Image 1 (cartoon, rainbow, N blue to C red):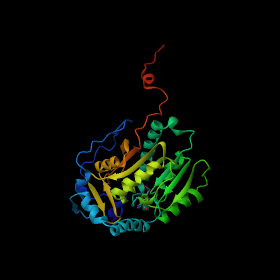
Image 2 (cartoon, protein in one colour):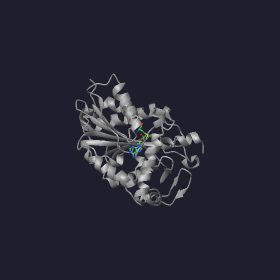
Image 3 (cartoon, rainbow, N blue to C red):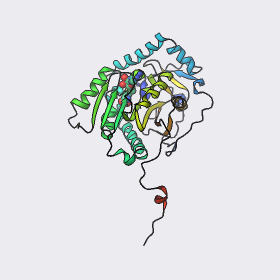
Image 4 (tube, rainbow, N blue to C red):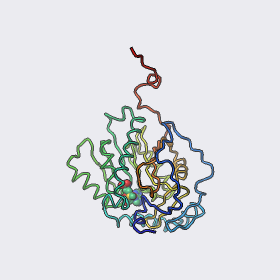
Length: 320
Ligand SMILES: C[S@@+](CC[C@H](N)C(=O)[O-])C[C@H]1O[C@@H](n2cnc3c(N)ncnc32)[C@H](O)[C@@H]1O
């Protein structure tokens, strides 16, 4: 395998091109605002997966047992994951695995998705309200700086690697002379997701991008269950992640897994989350995993952003 490509493994790994084959359509809205109930037939945990060396696992259980099957292994899994990132330069290129050039497309795609969600789920898109977001596995604060800080009055950053968090603080607080009291990065928390519990009812949006693959399935589920309590009524999660074509792909170097869309949906169901909407990220290099954005809500959301009723909007105008 090409080493440079391998270095990019954690977010955008162009692994196993022969298996990648035909990608799903690069842009599709799964729902137009109505909650989706995903029929889960056979458990996705029974689907075969592989690791970054091409070794096959019969199912996810087999892989998890081998990687994290006792307390020592699990501690080592999380230690190795953080240690990997501790060796990475605190830069956009570093947190994007050498694919810094995808930053613009990523931010553009996220912004369009966020705008849609705010307009559909928050009265007047939340304008006039004090909005607070949490950026999970924030790295150097790339997403906060390029997106969240413009939409939210406060953003908290959660990241286990201290030199990333220091870089985030430096660029968002010390260097950002444009920072204002009304749009600011407030708290910088150096903790991994599996150990984090938010303050109850603090957040309108919890953004989780390119980091959930570090969590085991059980920690994924318990993280989202705890994090739900951190949402304000009507608040939502955005999960943006690489997706495998089927089953999972284990990255042995940074100790993370890339899950399939069906695998994610099974975990959402275990978390008691509703999949409100999902969308594929466009404009990424073809060799990369498909990146999906999922909007998740604790309850069946009401669509409340619309100011004119549908009936009114559909009433034909009269040309006089
Ligand atoms: C690919 S980078 C993405 C950073 C950021 N989300 C972005 O998109 O710019 C992965 C991030 O996940 C963080 N990470 C690793 N293990 C984690 C864990 N257990 N909990 C939370 N974040 C973790 C890494 O330190 C790193 O900052």
